[in-house]
Image 1 (tube, one colour):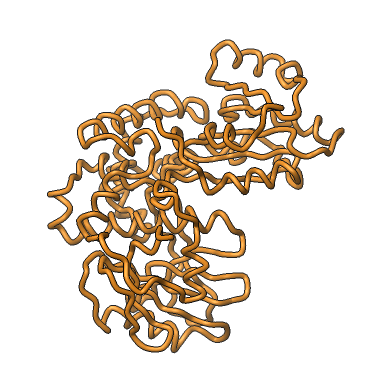
Image 2: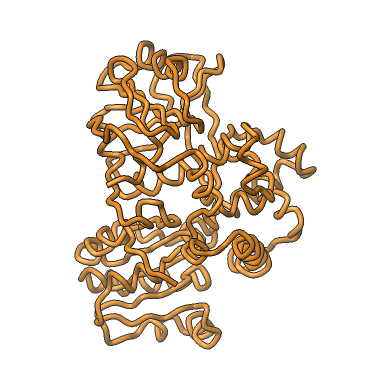
Length: 409
C-alpha cells in the first residue's frame, strides 16, 4: 500500500519537541501508525495492543508494560487498555522531557466515563482524518489561508462534476484509494462488520448490533442535515435514549462528526441545532448502496454526498490549525449557509456548496443577507464552491470558486 505524506506530520514532529504525551486519534485504518512511523526516528519502540500477547501484559502490569529504554514509546490502540493513562501520568509527572509517549486511538479514549485522568497540560491531541485529495495529490493544505486572502487561481481545468463525484464515492481510507468499485464495496462491508462485532467491545457493551447498523445507515442518509432526533428515531424504530447512546458510540469511533451552529448574534431567529456529517464519503456511499448512476442523476443524493465530501476536505485542513473554527448557519426562516469558517481575529468566510457547474447571483442570496445583517465587525467573504473551472466575482467579497481549489497547489 502506498504511503502518503500526511499533513499532520509536521504537527506531530513539533509536538514531539514540546509535549510529553501525544495522542493521534481517528478512525480505524486511516493511517495513524503510518504517521507515527513517518515522524519518529529510530530512537523509539512500537507496541500495539492489537497484539494478543501484549494486551494482557498492559492490563495486568501497566507499570511493567511501560518500561522501555528508548526516547519514545509508541502505543497503538490505547483504548484497549485505558488504565495505562494514570501510569503514564505518573511517569511524565516525574520527568517533563518532551516526546516520551505517542499514543494512537481508534476511539476517543478521553470520553470513556471510566477514565478520570485527562492528562491536561501534558498531552497534545492530533486528530487524523482520512486522506484528503490534497494529500493524495501531494498538495499543501493552503485552502483555508486562500479563503481569507481571497487568493484563488483564475482557472482550474480538468476537474468536472463527474470527477468530483468519483472522488467522493472513493473516499479517503488509504487502503481503498487504489481499489476498484467492487473491491471498495467488499472492503467497507468487512470494515463495518469488524467495528461493530469487535472494536466496539473495547469501549461499550452493545446489546443490539442490528440497531447500531440501522443507525449508521440512518446517519449516512442524514449526513449534512440538521440533527432531527425525532425523525431519526422514527426512521430507525428505536427510542431516543438508545439513539443518543449509539450515536455517541459512533462518534467515539470517529465515523461521524458534529458541526455546531454559528450563534454569535443577538438575532433571535438563529438556529441552534448541530449538523452531523459522516467522516468518509466512500463509507457513506457504501453503507447506503450508492454508486455513480444512482447518485449522478439524483439531486438530493448528489448534494448530500458532495457537501459531506467538502466537509471532510475542510475539516482535514482546519484541524491542523487552532486559529480557525468551523460552524454552520441556519435560521428559522430557512436561510442557510453550509459552512462558516472564522479565524481568531473575527474574520468570517461563508461557504455554500453547489454540485453543478452553473452559477448565478441567486446562489449568493443567503451569503449576502448574512453579510448585511449579522456581520458587525471583521471582514466577511462569501464563497460558492461549484464544479466549474473559473473563479468568478459576484460583487464585493463574493465569488464563485472551483471545488478543485480545495486541493490545488
